[in-house]
Length: 273
Image (cartoon, rainbow, N blue to C red; front, side, top):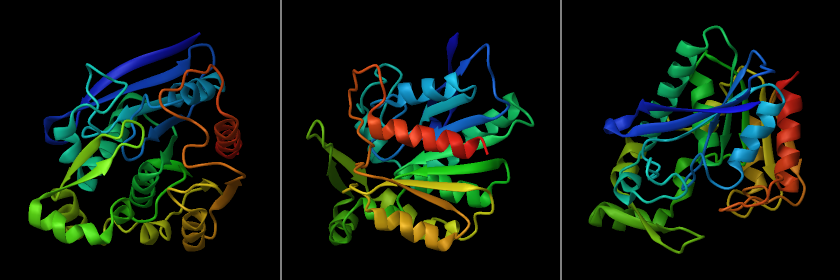
C-alpha cells in the first residue's frame, strides 16, 4: 500500500517547513529521495503527487516539502497565499531549510543514501547543497537554473533598492507577487557562495542533468553550461518538453504527462545504477 506521511519542521525565521514522505510499505529501497521545488512552486503543485507515487511504486521513499517562505500555508496547500512570507524569502533561507530537511532525514533514516532532485530554482539550490554536503549520494536536476539573479531583470535592481520591493507575476493567476529587496541584498552579500556554476565544478557525486529543449523559462543552453562545468555529469534532453515537462496547476489527470513520465523514467534508471 502507498503511504503518505506528513511532517512539519521549524524553518527559517520561525516559519514551518511542511512536508510529506510517500512510500510503499511492502517495497522499500534503502535510498530516500528529497525533492526541492522551484520559484513560485510548492510540494503539491501540479503533478508532484504523481511523481511521488511513481517513485514510491518503484520502492523509494520520496520526500517533498515546502520551503518555509514559499508562501504556502498549512491552511491552503494548493496555492501561494501568504505573500508576506513569499516577499521576504531569500536564498539563504532556502538553503537553511534544505539543510534542515536533510538533517531530519539523516536523523530518522541513518546510514540511508540520500538522493537530491531539484527543479528550476530548486535545482540551483540542489547543486550548491550537493557541492558542499557529503550526506548527498546522488544529484538530479530538472530544468535547473545556473544563476539565481536570472529570476529577475537587471534593470529592476535600481528600483528594487530604492523602493524596497518589486513584483513578479504569477503566470496562472496573473497576481502580482512581491519580492523584498532583502532577496537582492542577500544574493549580493553571498555572490560567491551562491554561484551555481562555480558549485557545479565542485560536484563529485553522480549527477544527472535533465532539461527540455523547448523550455522558454530556462533555455537548454543553461543545462549545457552546467554540464560543461562538470564533465562527469550526464545530460539528457527531453525533446519538445517545456519548463514543467507538460504539467500544469491544478493537474487533474491520473497519469503523468508524457514528458514528465520520460523525466521520471530517466531519473529512475540513473538512480538505480
